[in-house]
Image (cartoon, rainbow, N blue to C red; front, side, top):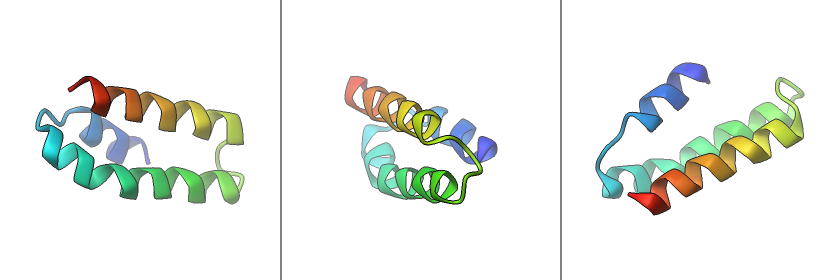
Amino acid sequence: MRNALRDFRALEDKNVAVEKLPHMLSVIDKLAKRSVIHKNKASNLKSKLMRQVNAM
């Protein structure tokens, strides 16, 4: 997950980021569901990713 997040944050093209965002959110949700990460941590990560895409 950390590598996928790092790669996503390195994106500079908004169109590519918008396409990959649903997949990243899905991965984060799956990890929270399986208790790999806490649900609040998942929420924070998703929020930060969405803010990053909107700011592009």
